[in-house]
Amino acid sequence: MKTVIITGATSGIGLETALKLTLKGYFVIGVGHSRENCDMAIEQIMRRNPEAKTVFFSGELMQQRELKRVAFELERYLAENCNGELYALINNVGGVRSWYQTTQEGYEQQFALNHLASFMLTYRLFPYIEKALGRVIMTGSNSHKGIKIQWKDVMLKKGYNPLTAYKQSKLCNILFAKALNDRYRRNGIAAYTVDPGLVKTNIGNKQTGKLVNVIWSLRKKQGVSPEIPAETYVFLCESRDAPKGLYYYLCREQKYSKEVTNENADRLFELSEKLCGIKYSDLVTEL
Image (cartoon, rainbow, N blue to C red; front, side, top):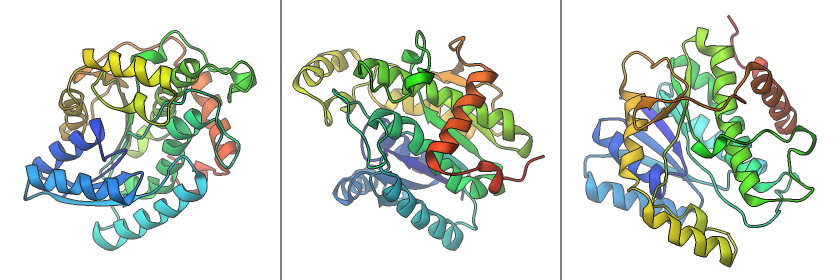
């Protein structure tokens, strides 16, 4: 039985993807913000698929101290119960903020949660992914187009705009996927970014101000059910031969921003290593 880890798995796209993968026979390890949310997610999955094989871990991945704790628990669980193999890591966790807020490390929260959390968790779990010749999947967005990385002020301390911060973090997702492919595709590992489109989720209603809350409440009514984008994650997991593309929407490869270049991918990768205090080369067998 193949093991998949999904972050942000207690609601929306993450929960639907978890359900669909259990129906396909995968063992799904979910990660959620709180134990209460995780318990409710397990209940929903088991109600819709009584034969599901799933377990959940809780933690605030935005904070690096918490992420390291969760990563340690996941590492131990994989080693003891999954033959030390992780077939797919779906980095789905993400959020929106209405104003400038920082983590304990002083990093802007959207950048920290939407990008650095995935970057660091992938690093911690990379040996298990490498052993399984697995896949890393990021939840991106079409909004990554029309934006550039603000290299001189990545945390956007000057003139903070929440939409700019969100778009930049989504560009980071696809740049990270590209960097992984450039470095480790030869190791048998494939990385992707999924554009879920406009989806009826509560991402814009969590920890946001009244204006963003109202705008998102109206906008999400035009979105599709989370079941629709969940199919793309299943497609990327189910394909026997790893698909060659980088960016997918509705199970089809799509064009992406011209900002997705080798130079930008390498620069972000090196910056992220510095911000997380890690080096992928310390863990990964380079070919």
